[in-house]
Image 1 (cartoon, helix red, strand yellow):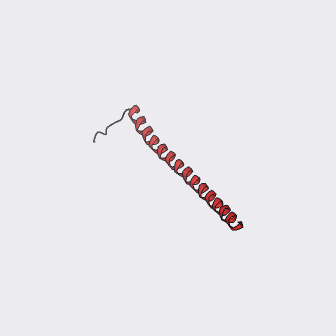
Image 2 (cartoon, rainbow, N blue to C red; image 1 turned 45 degrees about the vertical axis):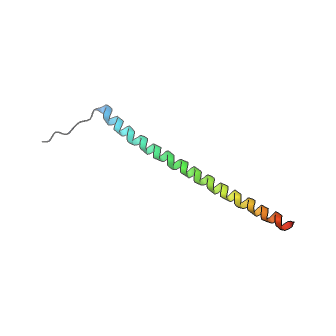
Image 3 (tube, rainbow, N blue to C red; image 1 turned 120 degrees about the vertical axis):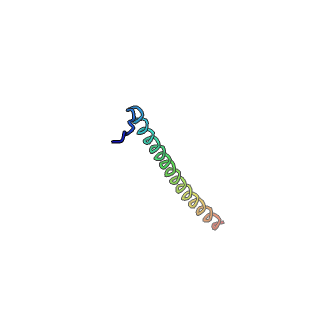
Length: 61
C-alpha cells in the first residue's frame, strides 16, 4: 500500500482558511461591482431627468 502524505491539523486549517479568504474576497468584489452598477444606473436616470428639464425650459423661452 502506498503511503499518503498527511498534513498537520494546522496546515489543513490554513489551506481551508485561505480558500475561504479567496472566496470572500471575490464575493466582496462582486458586491462592490454591483453597488457601482446601481450607482451608474442612478446617475444615468438623474442625467436623463435633468436633460428633460433643460429641454422643457428651453422650449418655454
